[in-house]
Length: 77
Image (cartoon, helix red, strand yellow):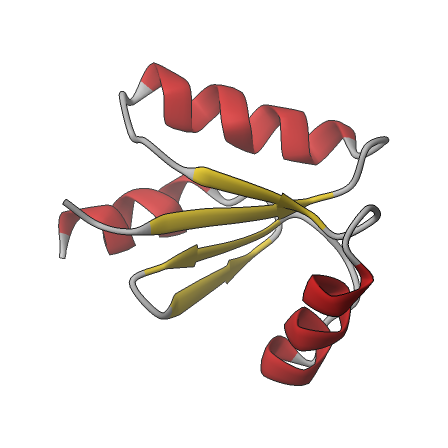
């Protein structure tokens, strides 16, 4: 099983779309709300160079934004 982490904020509509998409695909995931966790927010920016959300990490590979095709591609590897 792939390890999936979704980095979100409280007010991000695309984050909700990602979470709903993963649930529809029966993909378990961990959610990290970077609005509530400043340490995770700093780590995310240091790792990806991106400040926007959603960001999805799938076994060490990143998808920036809600991109169902990219998400599925990484899940099927």
